[in-house]
Image 1 (cartoon, helix red, strand yellow):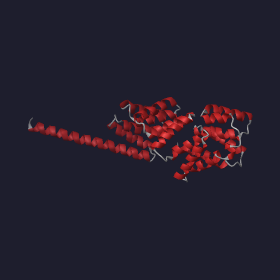
Image 2 (tube, rainbow, N blue to C red):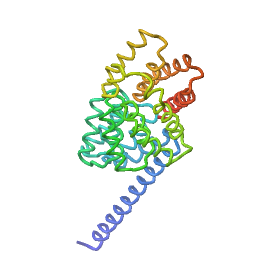
Image 3 (cartoon, one colour):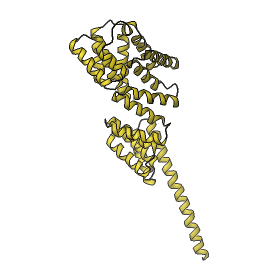
Length: 303
């Protein structure tokens, strides 16, 4: 090789290295800016930064997952699913995209595909907390409370003292009639953070569920037995039947309201809980029910 050709060759290599370094640096800059915008809630700007970064690295499942999440935050669920599909076409075992796509399916009410994605992510990484909680939430929304509990208990082993997990466990224990474990769980929530809204609800619900009025004063009927057995669909029908026979059955309204709240059927939950307040405006449980309605509305707003 002549000296000139050798110098041209060296120059080409230097240029390639500098260009590659520049492209990588630029990609990282856009990626980081996208994350910064995302964390600040500016999802449109985050989307733009991720899209620019993807022009330089179109085969990154991580970047695609960030982009999909930015679209989800702008209520573009179908677009987010399509982007997660792209990420998983590149890497079918990318657990973050599997979990995110599962959650999108869950939001659309496609519980089958949501469950498939969560189980796949957990098959790859059994201690994936996000997928485990999402799977538990999915069972909870389906009214499969015992399966929800099983998965919340696994999640709690991964992250002890997580109030979100404990909150749902305590309420589900109450619905299933496991009052000692419900009380123990509510006490744990209160010990972790006495001023959280979950702690306030825990204190109120503990007083409600464990009061003699609900534990000792009335014989169980088929609705109560179905609820405690975890047969939630049948319990709902039985409580509806009780209300049809007695429109002032505050207890039936309460349990229906609580079940609907756990399933995140929020309009029905609020409707039934407000009915309890109408029937018993000075009842000892009215403060708890009002707090629960506030909690439902906050959860609905912030997700």
